Length: 127
Image 1 (cartoon, rainbow, N blue to C red):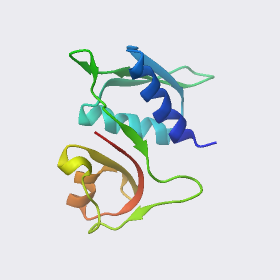
Image 2: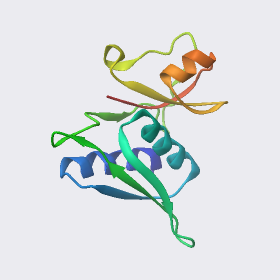
Image 3: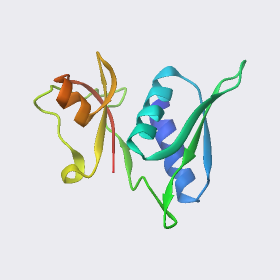
């Protein structure tokens, strides 16, 4: 089962019913993706919780009762990995969205990866 797709689906479904927070099982990759979403202003906060069973608590963000994330989509899947070189990185929705990439320098947005001239696996896109 694809853990990243499950995380994105939980965020999407929670925003559809106007929940304030969503809880997902912990992994370092999911936590780094959530931290990137927080840094870009798509979510309010993300916190690690629990000692034995760790979870990530994500605070969802809304503007005028509409979710801050209009759409979030998984690009690279376990059956088909998608990689982009630094010259081929694009900005979805004519620059209004971002790509989240897993690069040798860590989890980066499309803007950061272009600036650092680092390509990698495209995890997801959102706007």
